[in-house]
Image (cartoon, rainbow over the protein chains, first blue to last red):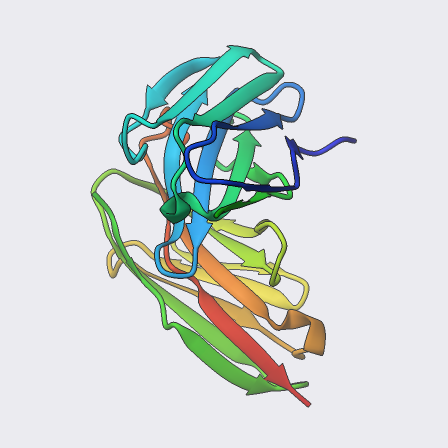
Amino acid sequence: DAGVIQSPRHEVTEMGQEVTLRCKPISGHDYLFWYRQTMMRGLELLIYFNNNVPIDDSGMPEDRFSAKMPNASFSTLKIQPSEPRDSAVYFCASSMRGVYSNQPQHFGDGTRLSIL
Amino acid sequence: GQNIDQPTEMTATEGAIVQINCTYQTSGFNGLFWYQQHAGEAPTFLSYNVLDGLEEKGRFSSFLSRSKGYSYLLLKELQMKDSASYLCAVRVNTNAGKSTFGDGTTLTVKP
């Protein structure tokens, strides 16, 4: 049973470059979440989708960040242009809707992003 | 929004019992989750509470009091591998699917 798959696992790039992070959720899951985790700010929700539709993007830090979910099995998070302060671990998670809302989120292994 | 508080760090001895507390302030509460996150890894689901009381799952138990906005995670017979960060997450609104995470409690288990 495949879990949430993220790529790449590590990315090191220079500031100003475009960065694209990819996520494949668990098949059959209705929700997809993008998080950013740093020591200073903990785990922050950036955006989440329900049935491929963005529901809440209030956590997206600024216009340099964008996310898409063109179909139920694929999502991207793009940063353009990237800045050193974007360095963090980015997690993608997915969950089922669940009648009693007891469905947990399943996290991918994350992408460790370093912007030099 | 939600306000979630957890202690930053805790230390305990192998074989002992430890209780990690979480307090929250929110409206439209609809469930509380505990996740475990080992260093350098992703969070993994441990437990879920939506009604008051204790949920037991092997060495781990989780308690909820909705009137007090309070939960705890109880870890028994501590093992070295339990050293990790423990995240409390609150969900509001059944249909939203969204949970807000606390900053996590880093537990160190010593021999």
